Length: 341
Image (cartoon, rainbow, N blue to C red; front, side, top):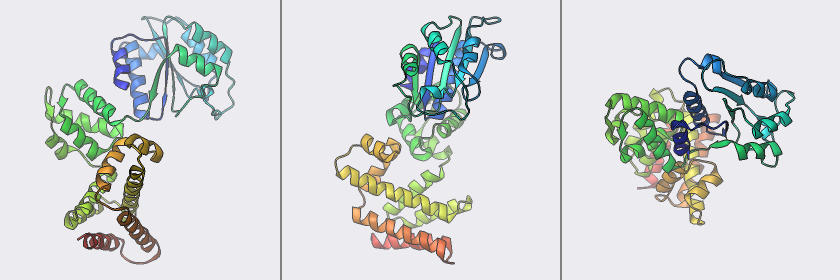
C-alpha cells in the first residue's frame, strides 16, 4: 500500500536500491520525490542527484556514479529511468548495457548511494535473471491505480500533510465530483486545504461549493438527472457545458460511453461478477463501476440498449445532416423523459 511504503521513507529508513514501476504516473513521481527529499538535504541536489536514461546512456555509467564518493554529506542519489531491460520491451535506441556489471552491483550496492530504478511499465519480465535479482534485493513499489479504500487513505494523508482534516462524506463527494485522477485530486485538495485554513476541516458542503467537475463527471451528473427524469436540470447542465465551450459531439460521445458502461456493468453483475472483477474486465476504475452499478439498477437492459441505439442515431445525424447539434441533444433528452414517464 502506498501510504505504508511512504511511511518507511518518512521514518528515514532508506534502502540502497529501489525499484519503482507501474502505470500511475502521479504516484511514481511522488514516491520518487519523497525518496530523494528524504535522502538529500536542501542544497545537496545539485551535487548529489544524478539522473540517467537507459534509452540514452549505458547502465554502467549510472553504476560508476553510484560507486563514486559524494563530495560532502552522507548520501548521493542516482535515478535510473526507463530500465527497459527489466521488461519484455525493446529500447527505442540501440544502447549496449553491461547487465553483468549491474548484477554485481545489485549483489553489493554502494553504502553511500541510493539507486532508484523507475519506469512507466505495467509489468516487468520476471523470467529475466536481472529482473528477478533486482526485485529480490530492492524495495519494490508498484504504482497501480488506487482502489476506493486506498483512495480514501491517500486523500487523508494528503490533507494531513497540509495541516487539515477531511470528513468521510467529503471524501466521497470529492471522488464523485472530481473523479479518480490523482493529479486532479491533489490540486483540488490543496485548494480546499487553503480555503479551510490551518487545522480546519474539509466538509462535504465545502467540496460541493469549491470543487470543479471534470467534463466526465458533469456527464455523469447529467445521466443522473436523466435517470431521475429531471429534464430541466439535465438541460441546464448541458447548457452549462456549452457555455464552457464544450462541443455537442464530444458531450454526445461521453453520454454514449457512460450508457455503454451502465449496460456492460448491469449485464456482468447479472452474470454474478463482483465490482473488482467488472473493473478488471472493462479496464475502468472500481469506483466508476461502483457508481455505474448504482445508476444501472434504475434501468432495464432493454431500456439501456434502446438508449444506446438513440445515441448512435443522434451521432449519425450530427455527422451526416445539417441539423443543429444542440437541438439533437435537446430532443434526445425530451424523448427519454417522455418514454420513462
